Length: 406
Image (cartoon, rainbow, N blue to C red; front, top):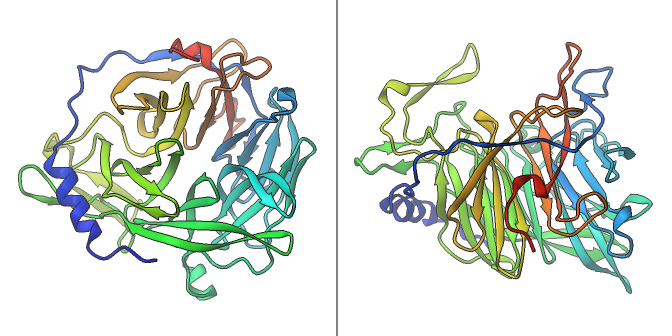
């Protein structure tokens, strides 16, 4: 089912007519610290070209102490950690693979069993990889004939406009396409004891926007590339997808079964929204004309990333979003999407802070050492780095946020 024609224009007209959300004056960010960190990953030859990116939390319902945190390491594959942050498994990518995002599906019917799955976007090969989870670790059960996600052939895969961000619900995976505004829903299906998938629906977010002053604006990007989505999370109870379009805004999109069922609406725009910019081919970066910022943006400093949910009831709880550009995190009420608080993760006695965070995951389930739940954040500048590019994941006791819990 392809439902992309005309909807991008409707999105632009509908959301921007409402204007930016009204926020109270910016309060100081609450400073918290992490309890545990995972071993450093190094993005160089000696480190196996490993670069931490996105975590997911698997809760072992039979024995909470055996719960796991699964993290992508891009060319370095997958890393699996226990609740003390110790690495218990390392999984390499297939040839040409690059693992970007990961999420969990619980209770998937595989033969006569109900199993839990870790679903991963392989941006190098434009496919999903599916792993069966057990306390002993992860086992690859991807069907050998799993199709390409977005590319029509291998030549297009080489262009690397491939599967990127990921969020799961029920038997579905919502996947974003790199360098594009496209989102796809893919239904997971068993095939001869393995798992494959098929396209269920697609949606294109807009790439240009009408501003309140009547001007039209597009975020600055490398020529030929669109404003992509990476960070995503699904509120299954509410039937809502939150999608972080990195240089634009955090979107709220209703879902029904395997389809996008509403025109997307903006929860909050990035601070740079509407600011003119030009692409500098030499530095391969955008140069923003901040002197001509029209003031239509929100509080998030691009990129908007790392969306995650902390659930305190059927519809209650919190939505946490990474403001990657200034290393802050914004917290919203799950039911109303109104701002609740903001925080930073600073250096603690034993664990350094979090900077330029990408992926995030949260659970309100009581776990050993985390009686009110666990928040896991990617740290894009782990220290000490010893002169190398170092990343990892930080584990945060939810109690540190001093927000209402179950």
